[in-house]
Image (cartoon, rainbow, N blue to C red; front, side, top):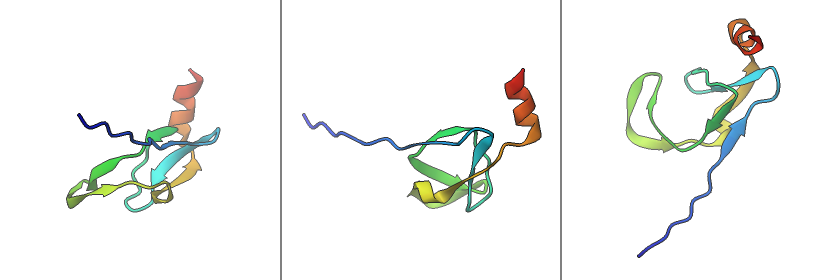
Length: 71
């Protein structure tokens, strides 16, 4: 039997911020678990891409998301 331990990277945005993928502008919520992505910009990739923290940026939370959180 083979056991493989893997480290999971979790990105969590600061208060009032959300995460956005830089390459295609796709907006995520406040938290994302990184792994492999098979699509960028809605188009399938030839090979899966291992996501890294530097592929994401924090941006101000859109007004509609902030309003939903307050409810």
